[in-house]
Image (cartoon, one colour):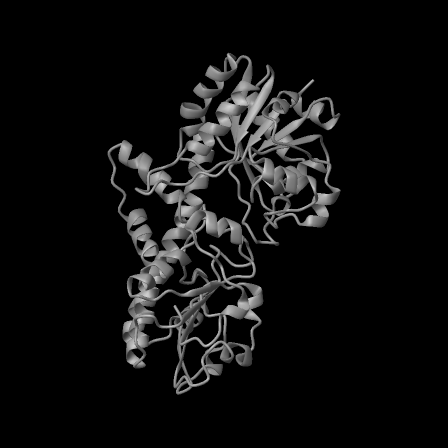
Length: 438
């Protein structure tokens, strides 16, 4: 009898290690068909889930209330499962080297509770080789079991896009891999339960790891190109969005746009690939060039704002600046690796302490990670400049009257930085407005 069949017959359980923006939707999807243990080291997060609250917003409170997931922060409960999925973050250190601490920690915990006949599948984005060269030895050491004999491993890169309600687990093709053919088939069959769009069997674990890391690297490079174009076109006095709209009429023009590149995927994953390349004696040129451009965009936006303040004869030091939006992307509460913080830090270098408001963001997380107290919306008033940094739906719906109410009535010129270009610029024209967008 296969492990897949045991799961279907509810003779075996699946565990999901890490219940964040990626892990929670996966656990929820599987729980509709098989028995699932949802494990996270955060007892506070587990209590929220148990009380029917989804702190990620990815599944929703109503679905959490109805789910059959067995939530726990007790690692010993992992012994009850035989198919384990590890979905924990893979951040980078300050020097942009991979921080494998979460993966190593989760692997150590799982290894202590691993039983014979189990399969462990990693979803965390890593450079090729981490699953077999880093994780397997830890699993063997902690469990006392032998990989290939007592347990098997696989890799299936996550493709969930936080905040995206269209491209979900059930609607995207899932890459799967295993250490041998038997494991590959088991992993493919198990994921077929929830990956309704189908699974793609990668030739090896390293191929699957590499496929994931280049997906985000490719996107990062394309956005960096758009950001560079934006800087060039600003010098030319040309509107970048209008240029892209015109170029987009060609059938094979790729629809990317300039913006801040943060989060725990696109702004991080390229560094995993270039780190491994450096180990092998190759210094990346294109990938790291793109990273440098994208990492500097917060500074560029802040400097552009300062120039506009000077041009409007507004004293820079202690200028009243409001920033709307703090998360790393729209309609998502996640503030990890948000690049809006770069705008804030750069403005502070000029003596500007901006008022930051975001109705979607996780305020407690922002204060814990950045020491930033996010203000309520009513605090953004009498401004001299406003930066709409994130394209949240609620911000996109603001009317010209609501935007105007953010500024001091005596302002001669209202400086509006619409970073993502979510407003019709024809509604914010001179002399009342000095409108700017990437």
